[in-house]
Image 1 (cartoon, helix red, strand yellow):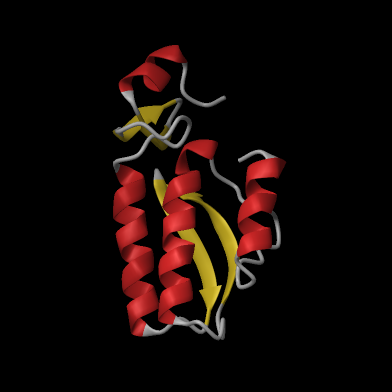
Image 2 (image 1 turned 180 degrees about the horizontal axis):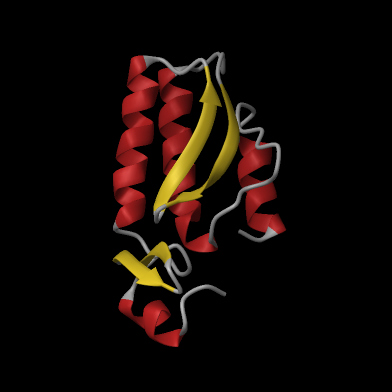
Length: 116
Protein backbone atom coordinates (compact mmCIF):
# COMPACT_ATOMS: atom_id res chain seq x y z
CA UNK A 1 0.00 0.00 0.00
CA UNK A 2 1.39 3.39 -0.83
CA UNK A 3 2.56 5.66 1.95
CA UNK A 4 -0.27 8.20 1.62
CA UNK A 5 -3.04 5.60 2.03
CA UNK A 6 -1.22 3.93 4.92
CA UNK A 7 -0.71 7.24 6.71
CA UNK A 8 -4.40 8.07 6.27
CA UNK A 9 -5.35 4.88 8.10
CA UNK A 10 -2.66 5.19 10.77
CA UNK A 11 -3.51 8.82 11.55
CA UNK A 12 -7.22 8.06 11.90
CA UNK A 13 -6.97 4.95 14.11
CA UNK A 14 -4.63 5.35 17.12
CA UNK A 15 -4.46 1.60 17.80
CA UNK A 16 -3.10 0.97 14.30
CA UNK A 17 0.69 1.02 14.81
CA UNK A 18 2.29 -1.34 12.30
CA UNK A 19 6.02 -1.49 12.90
CA UNK A 20 6.84 -2.00 9.20
CA UNK A 21 4.02 -0.12 7.54
CA UNK A 22 1.01 -1.68 5.87
CA UNK A 23 2.36 -4.52 3.75
CA UNK A 24 -0.43 -5.26 1.30
CA UNK A 25 -1.92 -3.74 -1.83
CA UNK A 26 -4.11 -0.62 -2.03
CA UNK A 27 -7.17 -2.68 -2.96
CA UNK A 28 -7.57 -3.70 0.67
CA UNK A 29 -7.73 -0.11 1.95
CA UNK A 30 -11.51 -0.32 2.45
CA UNK A 31 -11.26 -3.76 4.11
CA UNK A 32 -8.73 -2.43 6.64
CA UNK A 33 -10.66 0.81 7.21
CA UNK A 34 -13.92 -1.10 7.79
CA UNK A 35 -12.15 -3.42 10.22
CA UNK A 36 -10.66 -0.48 12.13
CA UNK A 37 -14.07 1.21 12.34
CA UNK A 38 -15.55 -1.98 13.81
CA UNK A 39 -12.71 -2.20 16.32
CA UNK A 40 -13.28 1.44 17.32
CA UNK A 41 -16.92 0.60 18.11
CA UNK A 42 -15.95 -2.58 19.97
CA UNK A 43 -13.18 -0.93 22.04
CA UNK A 44 -13.70 2.85 22.10
CA UNK A 45 -10.95 3.28 24.70
CA UNK A 46 -8.45 1.83 22.20
CA UNK A 47 -7.06 -0.60 24.75
CA UNK A 48 -5.79 -2.57 21.79
CA UNK A 49 -2.91 -2.50 19.29
CA UNK A 50 -2.38 -3.69 15.74
CA UNK A 51 1.35 -4.04 15.10
CA UNK A 52 1.33 -5.85 11.74
CA UNK A 53 -0.82 -5.54 8.64
CA UNK A 54 0.08 -7.69 5.68
CA UNK A 55 -0.83 -10.64 3.51
CA UNK A 56 -0.43 -14.36 4.05
CA UNK A 57 -1.59 -16.89 1.45
CA UNK A 58 -3.78 -14.25 -0.20
CA UNK A 59 -5.54 -13.27 3.01
CA UNK A 60 -5.30 -10.14 5.16
CA UNK A 61 -2.98 -10.81 8.09
CA UNK A 62 -3.33 -8.81 11.31
CA UNK A 63 -0.75 -9.03 14.10
CA UNK A 64 -2.17 -7.64 17.32
CA UNK A 65 -2.02 -7.41 21.10
CA UNK A 66 -4.90 -7.76 23.57
CA UNK A 67 -7.77 -8.68 21.24
CA UNK A 68 -11.12 -9.44 22.79
CA UNK A 69 -13.27 -12.20 21.33
CA UNK A 70 -15.44 -9.71 19.37
CA UNK A 71 -12.30 -8.10 17.92
CA UNK A 72 -10.94 -11.52 16.94
CA UNK A 73 -14.24 -12.27 15.18
CA UNK A 74 -14.04 -8.93 13.32
CA UNK A 75 -10.48 -9.78 12.21
CA UNK A 76 -11.55 -13.21 10.95
CA UNK A 77 -14.43 -11.61 9.02
CA UNK A 78 -12.05 -9.04 7.46
CA UNK A 79 -9.81 -11.93 6.42
CA UNK A 80 -12.75 -13.63 4.69
CA UNK A 81 -13.67 -10.37 2.94
CA UNK A 82 -10.05 -9.89 1.82
CA UNK A 83 -10.11 -13.29 0.11
CA UNK A 84 -12.94 -12.01 -2.13
CA UNK A 85 -11.43 -8.56 -2.74
CA UNK A 86 -8.63 -7.85 -5.21
CA UNK A 87 -5.60 -6.71 -3.23
CA UNK A 88 -4.49 -4.48 -6.10
CA UNK A 89 -7.66 -2.66 -7.21
CA UNK A 90 -10.41 -3.49 -4.68
CA UNK A 91 -12.77 -5.14 -7.18
CA UNK A 92 -14.36 -8.53 -6.46
CA UNK A 93 -11.83 -11.32 -6.82
CA UNK A 94 -10.72 -14.67 -5.47
CA UNK A 95 -7.54 -16.42 -4.39
CA UNK A 96 -5.26 -17.05 -7.38
CA UNK A 97 -1.71 -18.35 -7.71
CA UNK A 98 0.78 -16.18 -9.58
CA UNK A 99 4.52 -16.99 -9.63
CA UNK A 100 4.00 -19.54 -6.81
CA UNK A 101 2.44 -16.89 -4.54
CA UNK A 102 -1.22 -16.69 -3.52
CA UNK A 103 -3.03 -13.39 -4.03
CA UNK A 104 -6.62 -12.25 -3.84
CA UNK A 105 -7.06 -10.88 -7.36
CA UNK A 106 -9.73 -9.94 -9.85
CA UNK A 107 -9.61 -11.31 -13.38
CA UNK A 108 -8.19 -8.06 -14.84
CA UNK A 109 -5.28 -7.79 -12.40
CA UNK A 110 -4.52 -11.50 -12.81
CA UNK A 111 -4.38 -11.08 -16.59
CA UNK A 112 -2.13 -8.00 -16.34
CA UNK A 113 0.48 -9.89 -14.39
CA UNK A 114 -0.53 -9.86 -10.76
CA UNK A 115 2.16 -8.59 -8.49
CA UNK A 116 2.95 -4.96 -9.20
